[in-house]
Each structure stands twice: as C-alpha cells, then as structure tokens.
Length: 91
Image (cartoon, rainbow, N blue to C red; front, side):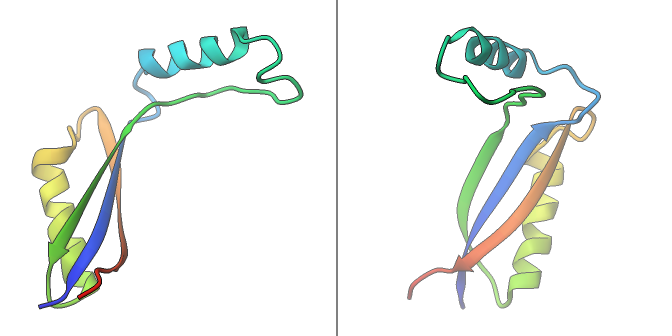
C-alpha cells in the first residue's frame, strides 16, 4: 500500500486572540533595522504536524487525516486546520 507525506497546519480561528502571535509581532517591530522597509501586522502562530500515512489513494488519505484532525489534532471551537498531502513517500 502506498505511503503519503501529510502536513496538517493548525491555527487559531481569526476571531480568537493569539497572544503568542501578538508577542512575536511586537518583537519583530521592536527590532530596529531587522524589519526596516517592510510593514508587519496580523502575526499568527500555529503548529504544523507532519506524518506519513499509508493508504490506497491520496483522496482517501486526506479524508482519513481530516477525521483525525477533527477529533484529535485541532480544537474545532478555537482552531481551524488545513490538510495537505505533500507527496507519495519513496518506496
């Protein structure tokens, strides 16, 4: 059975405060010279979970990982997620 590399990105929903993102944004803005010439705003911090999943096809793997994310990887009240099947693993 083929194996697929999968990435699940979990982020706070837009209406949920992200104190870690706000702290990173402040730090970026306070570092004189580092961010000169660019405007930084709306910094959000999340997590990426990567895994190898065995399955018969890409669509089936994606649906299975979505079910896992719904139940285990993300809190649906506060977080949203995206699932990306990156590639089939080398055999």
